[in-house]
Length: 481
Image 1 (cartoon, one colour):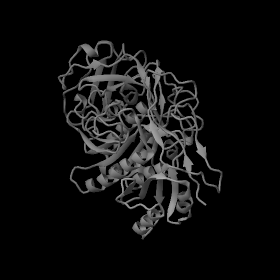
Image 2 (spheres, helix red, strand yellow):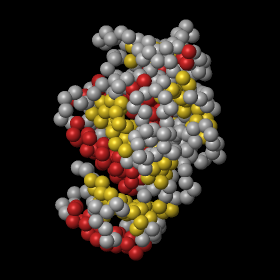
Image 3 (cartoon, one colour):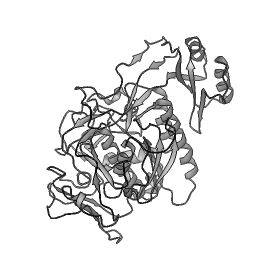
Image 4 (tube, one colour):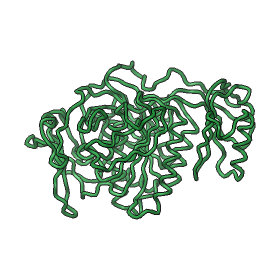
């Protein structure tokens, strides 16, 4: 007999308005699981039916399931999510009299209630770093708002040809940091428009691939909106978003110049969602690289979706957070499902309220896109070997990481710190003579390029290549999942 679940979900980052008690990282107070061999009654709820992979009569199976509730695929209350990897059907307002029928169908692998997903906010006062930590073996130190930092890399391609799908609250694609590389993909949220009304998606996209503040500054950024302007959504929306990415990836595989696809997902649930986990793993099987945030509840990442699908058991990369002092962030989830740690406190990136507005945020949501960016850079460096081979890329990523470079309880996970493989050859504290956040203009093949900047003066200066003045949204660093 199949087991069904009911739970509430969250997104992986926080902002500065609310302070959560210790141990509270996810939105939602309870997670209800059925005892083995029993079913939880789902009455008047929206449910997801996950159909078994490889069923030759999948369309008949879907119709048979809908016949139980007297629905058709064309009904507004039904959403059939289908691609080359999986088939899932969302059925709204299902009564308990239908749940047993769904569970009795051999073709249906999982019956699960649609979960609510929500971003959460906490004021984070710890210091942050920048791109220097991931490109300098010695690291960085001090207050990043007062000190200067240097981002060092081997060449200027920085992820060119890689599609980074930011599955989040949307992206302000017109923001100056995206330099024309960001596009609107699809909107599966309840919002009528693609606008990022929350800021979370724009911030994570800026870290993954924005110029000046991001890692993979040559990659394509594609917005997949699954969360609304209030930072909320549903598990079914995220599945629909991932399904769309799979279809897009399959279309792109034959196009010239295409290196590979990567999904950066800084959100999670309060519990486990088999259907969401399945969608993530199927995307990985399709050759799409996936990085996910570990979560901000200071707990075991193996207890929540989708962080739990990381670790040694898959090619998915789950990301924890550390601070500028090379310590595991107190909010970061840990455990064997966490593969790698990255900068996640007081990270400066693009913001949604203007094309030259930036903001500081903290959370595993901010650590995740650092990893996404490095993954994109590594893919572009070896398209044939890593472009569409998630397992090989994960091996490369973990092999490039710094070992035992930070302190703190990791609860069984490896002590691996994100690195782009460039030593940087800088002292921990950067020189104080760099006054602007600028990108060097040299394009000489094979020459290392750097981004330098004084965090105290950046708002007063124009960038050399973007010809824009950066305005700081807030001096707070809200915690985001």
